[in-house]
Length: 60
Image (cartoon, rainbow, N blue to C red; front, side):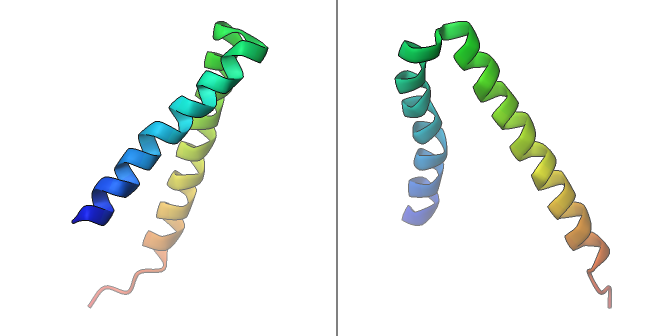
């Protein structure tokens, strides 16, 4: 159970810390755009992987 909390905390805190470092170089608006695009890319990759895994499932 602790592993779930560690993964969840990392999934939330790592992008936030990265945004904090990035905002001083790119500005708030550009940082928001870059991180938003990253979320879109990760979501699309997850969709493709999930659909390909589902198509390979064997139903008994």
